[in-house]
Image (tube, rainbow, N blue to C red):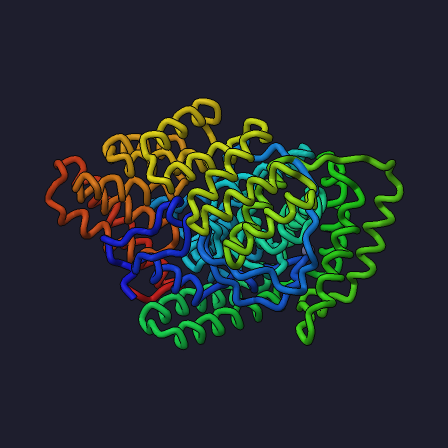
Length: 562
Ligand SMILES: [Zn+2]
């Protein structure tokens, strides 16, 4: 276990897309992620935690993903959105000058919005570092697009939201303090249409706008702290231990603590009804199918029946579900029927998530069969999934062949562009890949996947200086985009610019909430001996801030390593 090894950066997207991780640093990183997995029982779980049998979800993007549990019925496709648009961007990391909220002050019954946001960001970093965040720009962009369409459907919402995908087959979605909403990939795959997915997001958004979380937390601050500290300790324990049994034990401890907190912080029955009611209005205002909420509640319940001896805790603890289904259905009955088309993005994102599942060749066979038998709701998405599956299977000729078919029928779309560029990368046609990404970026300058992939292609094409310059430029536009730091680190490593390499690697670790590793990288940066006076003083200032932040977290009980 040497996650701190600076010479083993995480894999590029192309590597992830091409197959399981091979680098040891990555493996270690992923192992830590799997060991903690706060994903299936996060704190503040609200609705829809109809967890399926496979809680031991693996994965990070493009790696191995467990196949869908048998409890999830075959997933008919159907739908289209205007994805991609807004780069909602992930959480902004705490800047050094920001103080963590003082959670110990019991005289403060309700946190201020700023404190809530900071707490949310802190939890987000734990989640990222613990493998509960799917590092997939396309999926996260889509969820932000969909979520923000719901948020802006009414004018009353003052706060920002960040939506993110959780790499977990368990069917769940949850809201964190500060407007962070996590959606498990299992839930995205269970949704038959975009309105159903939107109905869950609308419900979660409403928990935030109705201040249910803040109210629930007011009396539970100590439980919250205990849980977060427990997660942090589990992360550290798994790093120290290294054996898989230690990791499993850590995961169990973290899971138990998170679950205990969840049960105590669970929203009240009144909260659930209110979130349904307000969420329904939001769903309809945003132009989605009013029937979707009742339909999806039904579907959640039915999917849970297949899970033997493992009734999802949400449904077990909340016998109100039938009532809620009935209410949602009767609300919809009062409205005129409305045909709602799903976005192409919805279909593409589902096909992409599908392609991550289980054996890549089997997935390719599934997509090919569906195409041959015309069993699909969206033909473009089916071809897209076929390319993605062959790419993950590392069968480049097959991927190229499938891409030709895809491009014959696909409308112009950034996800198709990114896929085409990645096929070229996998085929080692680097200059062609660079060209493809360049032309795609002129059309879609804000698409984060392209912004990640382009410098990746530049590095491979032997142009690391261009890659680092590009990454730096984009970091000015998107300062909260942690993965760009990781790309920049590799670009600088290829130029043997060690101060800049360690600086960016450190920022990446800070982004995923691993302050000890961030500090180590910044220490290496100060010792690199290849920076000018100005660069060195910037690095030293940041190092002091990181050390201070780490000390503060230790004081709060979030971490104990040094
Ligand atoms: Zn709820």
